[in-house]
Image 1 (tube, rainbow over the protein chains, first blue to last red):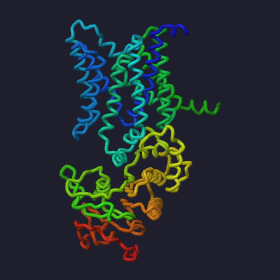
Image 2 (cartoon, rainbow over the protein chains, first blue to last red; image 1 turned 45 degrees about the vertical axis):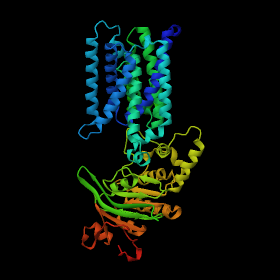
Image 3 (cartoon, each protein chain N blue to C red; image 1 turned 60 degrees about the horizontal axis):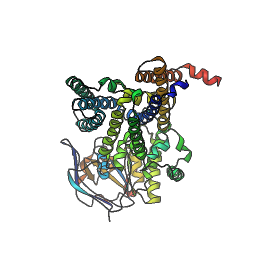
Length: 275
Length: 243
């Protein structure tokens, strides 16, 4: 077991994985509470379009991915304000457009040195010290924003009418929240991949909800479950040579099933009695 | 000097008029009941006063020191998450407090006591409370910023008659003790007549001079539509019919 920690790249993987786990869990609770889970998938796929464009025009793919995620957030906000366009349907529209642009760009960019697979499925073990540093800065900024605006976001998500009566900045906060998710997703492409990042945002929230109902406890426990999932995933991938992101996602699903069965069956009563 | 003056205010949504030509003066310390059939524009009028909805016509003049507390009709619908009473109250505070936990707890306890709830309710789950207790928590939340005008939109369901009466008594107490102006939407006409200083009969327009019971029963021939400021005269309780 000590062997795994003797490699620098593994230490970096754990560090960036934990930072990603905490930010994803915090944002994920707000996403699930506001019934916008599809939005995370939409932003991930449009970030991939950014990667494609970056590869095609030889500009830093992660930087363009952040740009496209921000544009997609704005687009989603303004399109979903149209009465004839339901938000989840608009999300799917932008999502498909994003992945289509990504594939076209990668096809046109002949002999490109960047593999789209890295961003589709993630590559946490190849994270550079520079990428780790940038990710940690981004995590600190996002966590600070979430805590500074916590009460207002809580109010916006759970009681829109009351929010409007107190603050005149509803559009600003809606866009601001989408952009926070967009930036996080774009930064996380390399870690867990555009196709799997939603699992880190959504699954731990569902798992935490099996054990606790309260929103604040859910913030804490979903972070804990995400960290456990990341740890198990990385360890399994190291010893059994399987893709890390898949191992992480499967660990998260395993944790969910475990808690779901425990809290929704007679096991709980039996164990509780014995304790 | 009125704290809020509405002059010929009209609000419409996509060609459909919600409220039309409303003129009204609200004084500090007023306790006003707003009645009318479903779709009469009661919630729209409250939201217009709050500035959530911008009127297409007319103007609203506020005095300098006016600050609102609001109890929305559809507060905190059942959700995937359950919130504690503390979390619900936190929504009424601008910033999350890391270092002022004690002061915040004191403020929350004080407001809960004001609405007749024990401070131990802070840690209870909001969704496990009864309809009346939920409403009290929501009133406490609206009082956190010490507003001088409280707008109360009654929920359509989930609260029984006795609880409603208790809530009206609570609002009347707040009005009498703190001189807070209260405008509330109600579906319980008897209790409205007993407690409040003025009654506004709204059915897209404000109807004046009719008895609230006749108005709610659709007998509008005794009413006249009011469009000028000053609006309604106070309804004196001794003029009311026995109900």
